[in-house]
Image (cartoon, rainbow, N blue to C red; front, side):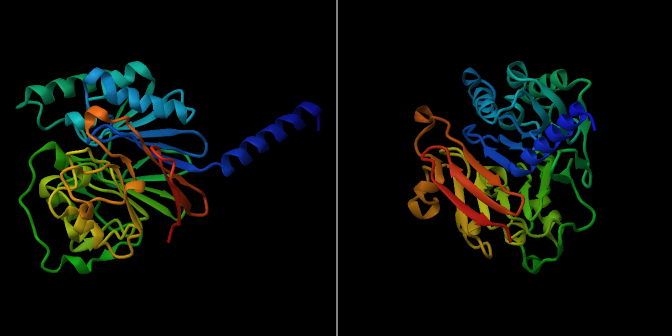
Length: 341
């Protein structure tokens, strides 16, 4: 074996060993009640789910880029847009000018653009930046993220046909409340189940109650998960957060990417609190309209005040290959470690 070949093999082994020793990281970026979740795999590939709001001096795209740079990224490899409401896709045009985006994934064309000028503008801008790089997904598809498996469980108003991840009969469907079919972009949300060894992460965007019920009843089609990003910023106005789904997926930890006055409305914190086996709830924002009993602990909350005073602190989950994962609060650096069941 030549010296050069030996050095090449040694370097390759070192790179592989280094990648194996890294964790999978998930950041919940504060976009003030919108949504932006950044995932970075051990090999350094990135997937961003949603891009927050437009305007406010490009506040949300700037916050995303700040976190991306801190994570060592030079580009966003995959951008998944759950749906075309401004708090989920509005930051995309400005973001694309700040950092390269290699590939775009979405549920298909907007269903609201023809009847809403604001949505039409968002949709047109999105088409422009994604031209030639766009992939439309359907339930059951996988998104090619290195080191992890990402399965599309909902898209364009449809859900996966058969249970995955050990899903099956759902005891919470008996006498569960049904609601009318949602006719907005929310119900079209692209939902994802990310699997990394024992660790399972569920993010279904702003999926509405009727589609949550399709996903959960009479059969729970996504099984039990480790970490659940609470639907619709924390179940806005009872439009989302069907208990039959929330309780069936049995997350150990719930992360709420809410705003100071958006999300965690009504009795939704109580619904979360009744999840079997729940260990903790983490919030991007304290819900200022709620009392202490309807918020999580302060040390598990990234931002405490009004939008005007907000510093945009993030939450982060760092997941090891053996299923151990640590959540960290970017405001106070408080961390807590869990083991995926």
